[in-house]
Image (cartoon, rainbow, N blue to C red):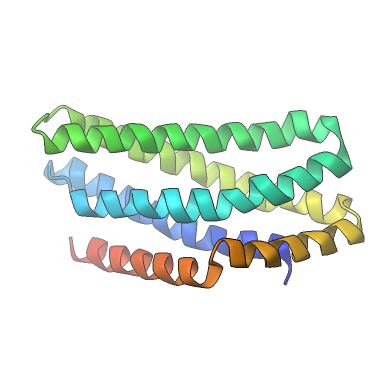
Amino acid sequence: MKAIQVLRDEHQYILRMLKVVRGFSIHTFKTQEVYYKGFHDAIDFIRNYADKFHHGKEEDILFLKMSSELGKAIEQGPIFGMLAEHDLGRLHIKTLEEALHAAEAGDEDAKVDIIANAISYTDLLYRHIDKEDNAIFNFAESQLSQESLQTLDVDFEAAKERLASDTTEKKYVQLLEELEATLASL
């Protein structure tokens, strides 16, 4: 297993979910109707697959390894930036969920907050993934020692069991596919 390639592969699922969230937002904008179940399911995917499952490996394994081996300049620069973006994404999702609850309770104005936070999240993540795939991950592959890259593979393998990787991936890829099909039928 190549740990960094695993992260890149997971990004492909996250990118697909971003298209779904954007699609639900466009649907809300055009029809003034919110597909609540779809947004709540997307939040489940984002929190448990994109954040806990995927970002957890980045934060707890890759970024720590990069910081310890490559020094303070990496830790306080690009890694700090990636962590700040993870936190900003969490804020957008929290605020999106609050807006969904407000709209479900009858607050029509909350629909604009649903769209605003959903689109802000997708825009942030599109840019974030591009930076990770094309800068952070390439830098890690070229600058970490071969021993560290092998350690990453071992650490990712150990994380597979802790994170129930096969079950988690299967569950959330299936949810993604269901949401893509639903979006296509809206």
